[in-house]
Length: 311
Image 1 (cartoon, rainbow, N blue to C red):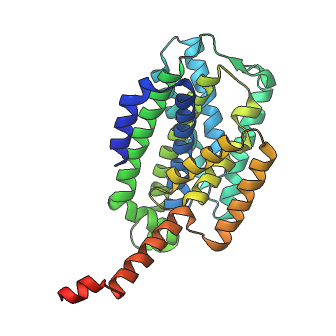
Image 2: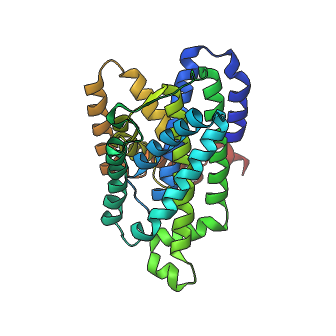
Image 3: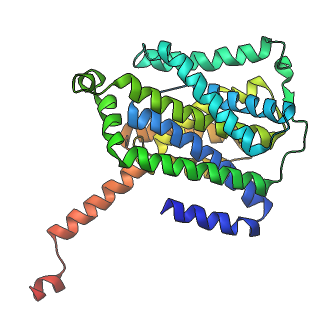
């Protein structure tokens, strides 16, 4: 169903106005970020606050490729993805020694360390950041790249959550030690998911950076990229197949509606988060599925009069 919707978007995007294309790009980047975090935390139990590290790294790698090599946008996004996966592999040996809250704090430290490195290292123009030497592509071209990236994410999630590998993910999430005793190698499972999710987040960061035409460490490695990913998944439904997409749509819509009232936007998001965590931990998807199950149970328990008379 998602692939069909993405195909329709690909066909009709040329007829959309600039506002809707920009909004669509924003939504697709948010959805990629949320899907990646959901794969980590919702399906594997790796609650990360390090999304900003890979998002910012993707932006800087893309700028390096475009400014230094002259390669195209597609190549820069692919190289950014490779860079994100490489960083994930390099830090995995240390970060996977941590569990629970310690793992979360460890991933947060990765992002802060990279931000400070970009500010103080002499090769990245410090806090001023970098400027893209060429003009950014138009919004329709960027939308197409973002849509292709989300198609890849959809395929990865379909394989990761609808195959035997999904069983391994849930086993590691529910009890890593018990999974190890049953023959699962938790380190390999976590490394695979961590590398894939990091590559996708870095790709999204590359496209976002290219869209802006200029980047700097405080924005590229901002904590908001990590918090937004967590927020969208919790609102949509952690560990649910459509939870990340529903959360992304909700968050982007709320952001647009309250664009002129940033303080109210933050307050409203906080209140919604608190209410969902307290009364509906399954998120919006959990609420909808619960209502559908109740309706289905009610119909089975109380068949219509016509159905009784036919019996």
